[in-house]
Each structure stands twice: as C-alpha cells, then as structure tokens.
Image (spheres, rainbow, N blue to C red):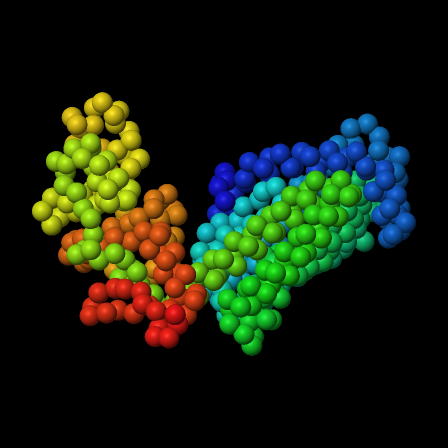
Length: 393
C-alpha cells in the first residue's frame, strides 16, 4: 500500500495513505459532535466525574475530537509496532507500516508459515493495545481534579484501545484473531489447508459484519467487511498457489527454446501481425542471431497505424528494457515478477545470457491446474515439462 513517508522507527518506514487524510478529520468531527454524550457514558461507566458542560463549551469539543482521533491512530500505530517488532525478533523483514482508512497495516516481505511465529506475531498487536489502554487509564487515575479535557481524551482512548484489541481478536481472517485461528489450525494440518479454513471462517464473519453495517447504517463497518472478504480470498489463493508450486522451477513450466516462436528485428510490423493471427500468439522474443534483444507484443504492434505497418519494423516498436527469469528460479517468483511489472510473459535467460525459453501466465495456470488435479511437475531429460501421473486420466 503506497503512502507518504513521514518517518522511520526501529528501521521501519512509517507511511500515511491518502485515505488517512480523509478519515482523521471525519473521526475528529464524529467524536467532537458527541463529546457530551461520550462524557456522560464514561461518567456512568467509570465514574470519571467529567464536567459535561465544560467539555461541550465553545470550540472545546472539536479540539477534544481531534486530540482523541490523533490519539486513536497513535494507538493503532503502536498496535502495528507490536506485530512488527515481534516479527523482526523472529527474523522477518517489515517493509513499512501504513496508516490508512481502516487503521494500520504492517507490510511483511514474507508471511510466517511457522504456526508459533504467526501466533505470537498476531497476538502481539492486541496485547499492545491492551497495554496502551491500561496506560491511558493510568493517566486518568493520576489526573488532577477538574482536568476535564485530560479525563475525556485519556478515558476515551483507554476504552477504544481495549475495544480495538477485542475487535481485532475476532476470528475474521486476515484480522489478528483470524491469524491466531490459522496458527492454531496449522499445528496439526498443512499451512495451505489451515489458511483455507481460516479464510472460510473470515468470509462468514465478513458477511455478518456487512449485514450488521447495512442495517445499522455503519458505512465503515461495510467497508471493513468488504476488505476482510477480499483479503481473505486473496491470501487463501496466494497460499494455495505457493503450496502448489512448491519445488517447481521456471524450467519445469516454461516453453522451451526449441518449441518457441521468435521474430527478428527486421520483421515488418505487418508480417508480425500476420504471424500473430496465424500462430495465435500475442508476444514474441526478438532475436539477433542467438542473442535476445527485445520482446514485442500485440500492444506494441497496435501502436502503429495500419497503413504504416509495412514501413515499420519490429525494432521500432519492441521493448528492450527487459525483465527476465532465471530457469532455476521458483515458478511462483516468476508469476509475482509478472504481476509487479504488469507483463504477461517473461523471457528465460541462463547464466550465459542465452535465451532458453519463455514463461507466461498461461503456462503457469496450466501447470497449476494439472498439479491441482494430481499432476506432478517433472524435469524430462534436463528440459522442463509438466506431465500427469500415470492413471490420473
């Protein structure tokens, strides 16, 4: 998730997403507009003795609302640092912590698969929130009489941080409680299966949150439900892919050099379009002898007007700034590289810089479907292929 970097702590960049700049004043307005009601509730629940008339006078409600909103997001930031510092202790890299519409998000370079690691990383955030809530209540206990603003802000933050901890422990994967659930399930079953089951529970909770939000007119709850559902589905899919492609390399999946369709730099764009139509390919490696010099796609060819395609050559439109895959790299890494660079295929180049094949999303999806139905990736005679186990079909 992108955002504006505002600083670094413990070596972790802290960012603000643009949605945070919208939700912070919204929260300040909502809290400020209900200051007297909130103060009365806290007086009845905890006997804080806040003078409701004093906190509701003049511009005080808006100052208190902004202070409480900022304090809430400071608590959220500390919550994310709870996750992050425990993760770093186990050796995981944290790319950043971002504050956004729904609170905070710690971005991991790699999610833990060890159930003990995930359990303690997941539970650390809610534990920090409880500690922050207790600390805020400690400020309330030592505050001098008549310090109504201090009593209101820290009493409110004490309550909200405890509520945040409890809410996050709901087993709505990928929230903290859902990750704790997956960790516990992963004690005696494969990580991918534990993820699928935790994600299924998370989707049920997302549906319930959406229904509650719809009937109570809580837009934020509806947005959260949507986020939980999408995130649960996405992580379950990613985990399934990772499990399926375990120990599968690019060489196992790629289209080999001898089976590859290529073009040369001096091929006209018109001839390229004809080949694309005849061979049903939308991307070709461009070779100068045996050397890979570029990649050309249907989108590149379309950039030339039809009447001019005889006059233009492939080297006029091809991409030369290439991202290549190593034949020994993980197949899933190749897929992630395609997603990061927005491309549908990667040339596969060996240590000597020679083209040895091409891997595409369709290659990976075909391999995935075969593996899911019982097929096993093998290397045949030193060349990659995907074959079915005898007797599967």
